[in-house]
Amino acid sequence: MDEDPSGNQFLLAGSAGPTRGIRMHSGAGRVVRMVLRPMILSERHRISPTVSLKDLLRGDAVVEGQTSLSLSNYVDEILCSGFPAFQGLPERAVRIQLESYLARAVDHDLPEGGFLFRRPAALRAWLTAYAAATSTTTSYSRILDAATPGEDEKPSRNTVTSYREALERLFLLDPLPAWVPSLSPLKRLVAAPKHHLVDPALAAHLIGATKDSLLYGPESTFLGALFESLATLCVRVMAQSAEATTGHLRTKGGEHEIDLMVEGRDRRVVGVEVKLASIITDRDVRHLHWLKQELGERVTDLVVLTTGPHAFRRADGIAVVPLGLLAP
Image (cartoon, rainbow, N blue to C red; front, top):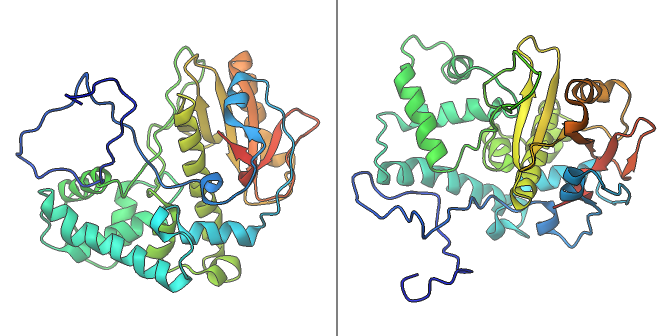
């Protein structure tokens, strides 16, 4: 940077930060920090997505296209992860890599970063319970209870907070913040974030999910949460390229919920629901209609992301888009 400050230079860094107490230049005015998340579907394969998030934000999106991706394919994408080095590996090799990734973070990266925990196994148990709460706003007290069933001596609130801070700093956790509207009539909104790991493959690995168990077995009820997490990853990456922010919306009584709120620089928004189904019913879009009634012209488009084969607009104007057809 000192020799050539003209820009267009990138320095790729890992998620582990320097050891606490080390003085370093912040880079203010010279370095712009950009979050580099795992690869999204359009980066993993030679597919041709047809519906642009930027166009949806402008309100002039053409919604059409067809994909051959099936529910089984989406499960494969969830389990293989978006980590570049894992692409094309056999299933067993991916599992070994994911386990190594988690173990190194807990056993090496956290202590090296100044986070010292007396019981690493308790941290791993908490992380597993957090993974089981993927795509929910489950309270941290309930996550702790799930991590310590039958235990009288549970980690303190300060300890759990330190877990969360350390794992977010390592970029293992990537919670989705609640959408905070400006100049909006919406009141009584939940402020808690939605729980997500940086890649849904990590969540699936932590709970021991396999392709068969997700499609046909005991984890089949968890598949919807993992698909929403995959969709959240894809939308956040695309929104970042459009200089937009992403959050979730939920009223305090739970009457209404929007899975993803994408807000552009002009404060206009796209409401997104994520559905594992391939066929969308009127009931699936009721919260989107409510959002339009509340925000009016501020809403540029309403979208349902699905596992179906076709992108189209319903008679009510709502866009139905297979996740594999969504483009930046």
